[in-house]
Image 1 (cartoon, rainbow, N blue to C red):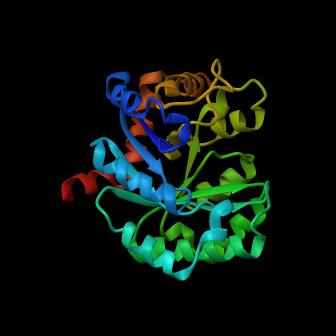
Image 2 (cartoon, rainbow, N blue to C red):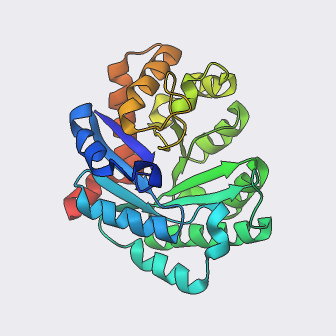
Length: 261
């Protein structure tokens, strides 16, 4: 079984066949999916998907590029949404300087506020960090984000930064990029990191693995990521699946969730 710890099945890319595709996942070896909020609307969409599918869980949050929409009243709404059954994390939250909008001070403000929310409700965080390595790490250290734990989604930095996050107790999200021929830095991170801190993700519909690069991604392509990791780590594909599933359940505390639903 494979757990997809980061998906966006509410995306319009799945508009024509969402239900048909999601219905295929269990028979395709995908045990659980965590759909991730990236705005107020996509968080609402995520809550609806959670209700419709027993194997879909969710994260509540606003992506840094969407933080321009946030207000204190919307934060109050997030504070209610995050308490719903099957919400397992606050995210995706963080900093994104690739697009560099809204302005960095706005991104930082709402990053801290959403970290506060995670601390308040006792949930892990899903961290998005793109071209913002130093500021992301500085804020997370200042805010003691290690107390909440969680995952650095779509980890894209080098071994040195991986070490920092691993030392804070975070998991690293590994997806389709690890299959790319030019992903030397990420492959070095995968080789370096302990399996006990790895979770698998798609970020679908984005970042499909080889040989589907450039096409719409889905959880059904995760076996290609499993194969790449097994080759880098020198372990069996079965061990990769078993370990990452165990890690995902621990990280998101899904076994605890299931006992309380």
